[in-house]
Image 1 (cartoon, rainbow, N blue to C red):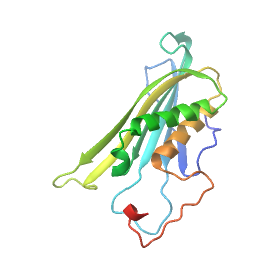
Image 2 (tube, rainbow, N blue to C red):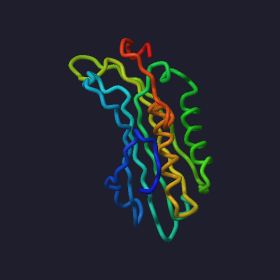
Image 3 (cartoon, one colour):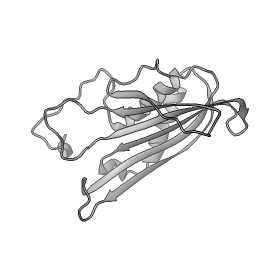
Image 4 (spheres, one colour):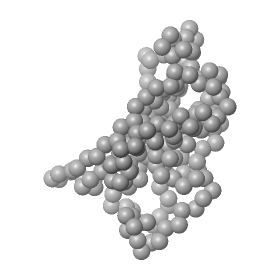
Length: 182
């Protein structure tokens, strides 16, 4: 899992895996790094992170249809227009399906949920007055032991959810425009 090649703005690191879900487990945390700037933002716009957990049961699990199960969680801040799009769940789910199917490693038993939320803060709660988030939860069974393509697919979906430009493409930003005008 540590040999995956991912978007340069995504940091991967081992995290504590859940206990008791399987005899063996390993987990990676993924976070989208903010570009280095000399300005500290008032609000943490564009936060996106996730975790990918590998569960292994040498005896197999009937519900998994195999011995290696991957469990993914992604959460990303999104803008209001995207949050209001009724097709967002279908599009986000297609990112995952396409990312997994585009790799050469077979998988089975894919399932999950996509949730789009909008929150309004009142009173003395810190943060932006309105916030919108995309959350994707999914699991699937790897049919081989090579986890690198699964990690790469997971990170591809995280990059999409975070709105990152493709690797190697530089985002041009005019400093005189607000975030809504970029």
